[in-house]
Image (tube, rainbow, N blue to C red; front, top):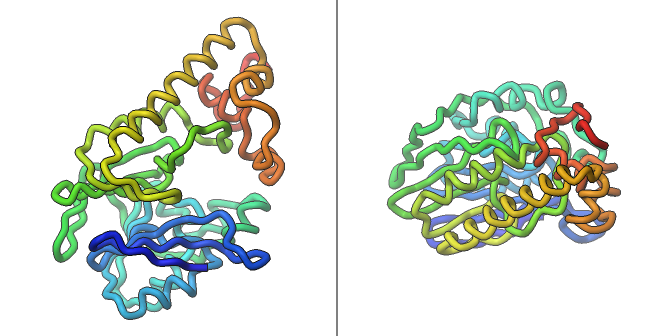
Length: 279
């Protein structure tokens, strides 16, 4: 399923696999001046190719290598001669062989599918991407993934944030995410004068300063609360229930890969595969 919305010179494509007649777990891609930011999931690759068939396309930038952002890379590269795919250096091995380098949990395969291979070129933090009319600065923003980056067009005040900022207040986190890095990366983009924020999902925001400030304040407050309860000797499950409420549907859908306890462990400095000192 694909829906297109225009924001001045930016076209947003909302993309999702159709299940039981409805789109499920949407993601977004953006077309600007011959450049595509992200490409959706594998299930919508054909729709993306068709939607862009009458548009000039010279660059495809992946904000990160998760399967719901690189799904049409291979199809576009096969049908667009000379198309440059650009991403953080850590993302390139995954683009080159997603099946080997990024095995998917069952829910990820169901909702987004396995991307085809594509060949990418590296982007450095602080480098620029030039299109015919605009110049985009690359801003390295790890946390959601080690290879995450944002794009900033300073003249227009456009900020493309991938999955760094999607709105809302986190009550759960996926295994392997680093909530402290996410907060630091949010602070980095919050320092950029932005007129428009274009996220990888959720709504587009104009004048996003307040939304970014509120998100940062929420995460810092939640982190302080987690640390306070940890000092009191509370276990990770106890902290998760106290601060994030009862069990969530998403924990069941993902078989625990996204959970309240992963959020707590990330605040406490644990990493995927490493048990915290107090369980």
